[in-house]
Amino acid sequence: MPLHADGGTLQKIKENKVITIGHRESSLPFSYYGANQEVVGYSHTFALKIVEAIKSRLDLPDLNVRLMPVTSANRITLVQNGTVDMECGSTTNNAERRKQVAFSNSLFVVSTRFMTRSNSGLLDFPHLAGKTVVTTAGTTSERLLRRMNDDKQMGMNIISAKDHGEAFLTLETGRAVAFMMDDALLYGERAKAKNPQDWMIAGPPVTLEVYACMLRKDDPDFKRLVNAVITRMMLSGEAERIYNKWFTTPIPPKGLNLDFPLSEPMRLLYEDPNDISFDGDGQESHSAGSALAAGKGYQWNWQVLLSKTPSGGTYLDWLWEGLRWTVLLSLSSWCVALLLGIFLGVLRTVNSKPYLVLFAKAYVELFRNVPLLVQLFTWYFVLPELLPDVWGDAIKQWHPLWQQFFAAWLCLSLFTAARIIEQVRTAIESLPPGRKNAGLALGMNLPQVYRFVLLPVALRITLPPLTSEFLNIFKNSAVATTIGLVELSRQAQQLVDYTAQPYEAFISVTVLYLLINVLVMLAMRRLESVVRIPRFTSGGKT
Image 1 (cartoon, one colour):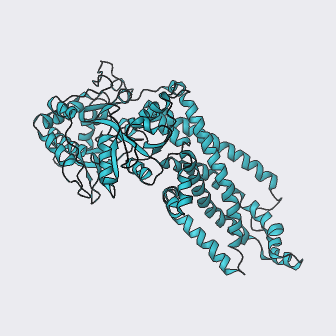
Image 2: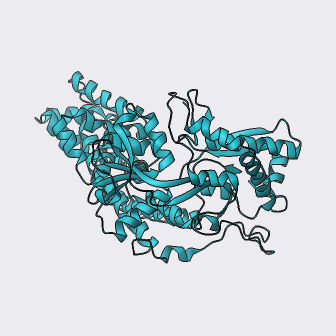
Image 3: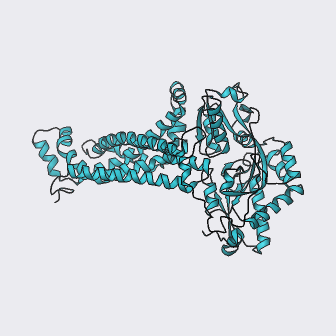
């Protein structure tokens, strides 16, 4: 989607007669899904008011409003590349992000605290030393938590969850003792809990931050319109009424009250609307040679890979660490998947034992037809709850990284094995039946026939599709990012969160994945040439 350097966002909207609003799926009460899966929330109300002003400004009463869910990991990129025209959720305005995007006047002022069980005895951040703490990936809270852990040598184990809902689930299931996040979001998650009274918000405020609508850089006309709407709402008292609706009265979907009264910083914001952030001047610089006007919508900076991270080392080191975990996860999963796939693939062809065939077939149908992400969440969240308490609690006491690795390893191994089973079965059934009969006639028993006659040829036949599965397991390993494992794609997202340089991060990851692909293909071609049976391709045909 072109960014329309001359007319900016308003020109783009006018030409396409569509405005795309980015929203969050579970940032209650700012932007989330209500009882009927409609988008609702405090920030979303501001977004809809801005849309009404755009309709009036452009004389487009029938303007099509497209709502697009965004995450902490992709929201900046989607605004930068024009996929989303404006994002109003729970995005913090800070100096690092202002290098790549612009922000409207502030919508909300939050402080960073943590949520824990009411009877945990954890009342302050020093009490978290040596414990497991969860936060949401790609947020300023994650960055603050990691910096606190490094600077104060607290020895915390940090879990980065995909979104706020998953972070609270991690806390609720006992994998973490505290959930660090912006206080308003913590009150929202507590309101959604089965028993809100079981949870408390603790710790003195560590920082103050402001939420704002995120816009593309160097588009002053659009920003002026957005700011005018927000300013009018705040000075007229409308914004405070919206606040009371979402923070001091029952809200959907459960009709629970967050009981979060208006703070003094919020009252001051309503009296003096502005776009100032607490980490410095939030005003944008609009020089005559702005990047967008010069045709440089994105500022490339490959040197960022060699920049120092908050915890030491470089961002390139982060990618290499992610690559190591990706390779370890993929290779270990492949070993199990291959052995299990061959074993059950053989059982699929033992027609004299129908119960074995039925068992292997049921395995294939189960693991091949359930989405990989569902399987991963089952192994990570559900398995410890199904096991005896002693075993489940023992798993939860592992280091978070090994909990994540174990769930991902189990998921990829069993899922890939289901695919290998069918390939092995097909290869065995493609062989002439005379081979099996000849082996039995020579006095071999059935296991010996498979071991010495059928499998050596069948595995040669299935080598090309096995190569594809080997490559797939490397690609599928990226799903582990949803439970926080620091594999390659997760490290790339974290690099984006810290540097706001998404293109360099994901191009680097793409190159690393391609390198893996090339090395695997060369190795497997070499293996094929070594084990190839002359004049034999498949099914006993030349």
